[in-house]
Image 1 (tube, rainbow, N blue to C red):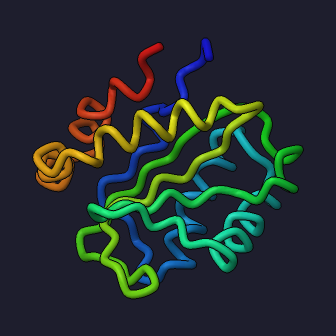
Image 2 (spheres, rainbow, N blue to C red):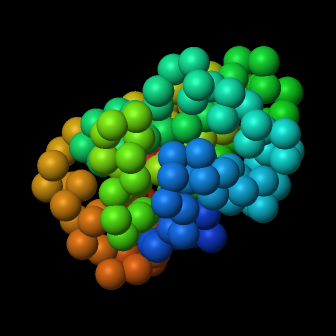
Length: 146
């Protein structure tokens, strides 16, 4: 993984979505816009969510595509959208949606780094309190570390 997985332009401090599916689309559009995935990848993210919830706890959901959608991934990338009000994610409150696209098995390493950050309630609180997308990005710099 030589390229930055989480780029500043893929971090949104105030997401516009109010439903789970719209939040998945919002995170997916960032991945498409950055050239990481093709447009069809968003549909596979929604399909994955129907079979297995990507809610992780501590206000975090990590939607990603199905195994069949791997060929739609051009490069490994993340997007992160924070919501001012929690979104109902199958009965769980979500404030952070991290869209993920991983080539080969790179996404497993990325997921473990995200999980470490979000397993610490103090770190989650810092992310909630961050003033803007630059602040969120700075708090997540270790996700990009090799």
